[in-house]
Structure formats: C-alpha cells, structure tokens
Image (cartoon, rainbow, N blue to C red; front, side, top):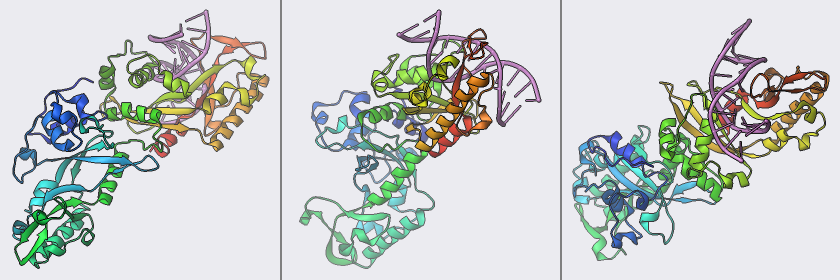
Length: 444
DNA sequence: GCATGATCATGC
DNA sequence: GCATGATCATGC
C-alpha cells in the first residue's frame, strides 16, 4: 500500500487517518525509519515504538496528552482471541498514574484524568507470545475513543470514589473491585517498598496505583468498535479467514479508487461489469488474477453493490444453464445446487452521498438448509416449466429466494428449447430482497 | 421503484 | 469461442 508519510499534529482526523495505515500490518512493515537492532527484538513497549517509528512523535514529558495540541492521547493495547476466535482485550488499559497529593485538590471537570483520557486514539495489536513487538499486527482499525456520554457519569463516580478514599486517608485500602469502569490498578514492580507512596491525609503509605479501564470495559469498547466498523467476527482462526480478514479489513470505508490504486489495477472501461470481482480477487491474492487458495477451498467470491439507501442494486446471477440439460438433470447434480452449497465470500460495496462506491462490509456465508430447499423448489419448478414452455419460467415474485432470467452474451446467444425453438440462454438469480436481508442480518 | 429484458469485458 | 460475474436498459 502506498503510504503517506505526513500527517498533521494539529488535526485529530489527520492523526487518525494516518494511524489507520497500520491496520492489518505490523510496525516493522510500516515503519519509515529503520528500527534499531535493540528494539527489533524487544518484546515490550510497543506503544513507545509506535510513537517513535511510526508517528515520529516525541510525546511531551508532562501529564498532558501525547498530541498536546489537539488533546489526543495515544494508546497501544493488546488483543487476544478467545476460544471462539473472537477478539478480546488482553488486559486492562492503563490510563494515567494516580498522584495522591494532586488528586485531592482536583475537580472532575478539570481533572488530569479527564484531560488525558476523554479523547484517545487506541491502537489494537494482536498479542502473540514470544513474538517481537515490532512484528505484532494491528488486525483492526484504530478506535478514536471519545468518552461516551452514557459512560461519563459512571466513570465520574468511579473517579470520585477513588478521590474520596484519598481524602479519607484510606488510599492504601483502594482495590480494583471498588469501582465499575475506571479502576485504581496496582502499578510498579513486586510490591516492595519502592512501589509505596505517601498520601496526603494519612501516615500510612499506599501502593502506587494508576487509573485504568477494566478489561470488561475494554471488551465492550472492542465489541462495539468491531460491530460499528462492519468487521466480521469469524468464529475460527482458520488461516483462510484470517488472510481474507487481513486483506479486506483495512479497506472498509475506502473508495473503489483507493482499493484500485492499492493493487494497481484499474477499470479500463465503464462497462467492465466484472471489475469489482477482479479487483477483490487481486486484492486477496496479492495482485494475481486468481486466488488458488480460495478456489481450492471452493469459495465463491461475490460482490454486492448497495444503493445509498442500502438496497442491493442488482439481483445476483449464477452460471447459465441449457434447457436441454436441465430437463435431464436431478437437483442433486445440477450446477445451481453445486454453487449454492458452496461457501461464499460476500464483499459488499455501498454508494456514498456523492455516488462513490465504498467497501461497506464483507463476510463468509453459506446458504441455510431452509433456503436450499427453496432453491430446490425453484429449480424443480424451472425444470417442470422448461418441459412445457421454456419461455415461461419462475419470475422474481414467485419466490423470496430466486428466479430465472436471461444470461446471454448478446441477443443472438440463443439455445434450443424442448419445444424446438431458439431462446435466449437463462440462469438462476438470487433475488435482491434476499440479498438485502442477508447483508444486514447475516453478515454482521 | 420494480420487474424484466438485454448485454459487456474479461480470461481461459 | 465461450462461460462468467456483473451491470445496464427499458417499460410500466
């Protein structure tokens, strides 16, 4: 992918857009400065490596946010997969140290915590044991976290609870279970003397603590973020899923042109009807015309384009059939049956306000049994009617699932019917309405 | 806006 | 030359 080497530190959006370039990559793959030998092997501190090698930004050594000018704090945090393959927070997100002396004098509105954490850019990397930090990938797009209005009262209450403990001279009694979203977590090494601090209203030393968001709070954020960005959560770590995800996810929301440029493959004619399909194959196969791995798995890549209102622009066609063939076949060995039993990879585009197509979502899918029965019904009905009158075949209104329509090279692409006439070649189509339901109910 | 009819460029 | 995935076009 072509990388822009510049971003503006005075624009949140610019920083955010720049950060998105990390999506699907590791720091090593995108770093514009060679990474020092010492850091190449490092297994920790990815956050500061990202700041140094990716953002080329030296954060202020103060309690101000990393991007001070726009009040944006940068966080880098780990993800792991649970047993079902879902992405989860590896741990709590540490926000900022608690200074017992100063928090006692603070008000919520002007608190250090709020200044630092109401606007954060959170980068999620996929944690892998023993792997150098610079090789860890960022599998999902960064999250621009603005403390949700609905969460503010709870976080504020948590903050006030912790502050009150300090005011009561009970900072040493703080525990993670005290609060709901925001917790005072232990910070520092083994709990030896050096991790003890003075507190203003008691002579008892208190453990060094930092504000952090609970792991469960992080999981909620991640879940919401994944859903919102249309990322499909795949219930498997199968490498094919993984590979597709890594290739497509960075382009969610991107225009067709941007995807086109990324693989250096362009539409040559406005009438190139299979262009998006070819483009996606190239994107998935590192620029090749075919994706043998997906072919081998019998995966059927289909693109769908939605109008601004979210309806599929077209029905979806399948290979053409010959009248003289279908009347001799059984459903089980028909090509339509063979096709719909496959696993599909749907890649969905949507027209934006100015008519530009953007990658909207994608996902694997296979047709549920009940719908396969309906497909069979339409197929049997087609076979029955071809024998009677090949010019009268199931129309779109006759099934919620599929219908039959022409599929020909041109007006002369006609074939013989059992009635002895020549008629335009036909194929099965999945109905727009069915695709619509599928995209919105089964792909997310 | 929908149903139906009619093709298009590509790649093997 | 032909199958394919997909889109364009027309009429109501």
